[in-house]
Image 1 (cartoon, rainbow, N blue to C red):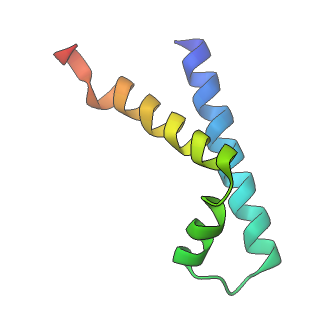
Image 2 (image 1 turned 120 degrees about the vertical axis):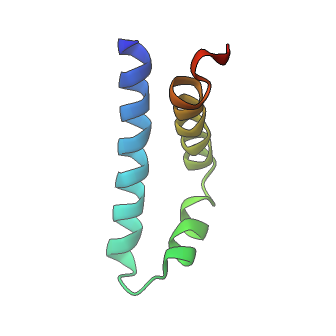
Length: 65
């Protein structure tokens, strides 16, 4: 549990850092433009996938598995 939580926090921090860097370079970017620029990078797409997997596995799957 500790390892998965640490990995989730690492991926979430990477996403926040990437969005913060894009926001600094273009402060008038819309949310859609921000997501387009974020998801252009393969490592960010992988981080988004891992974050969604972690959320689904720990909160959405519940007692069904």
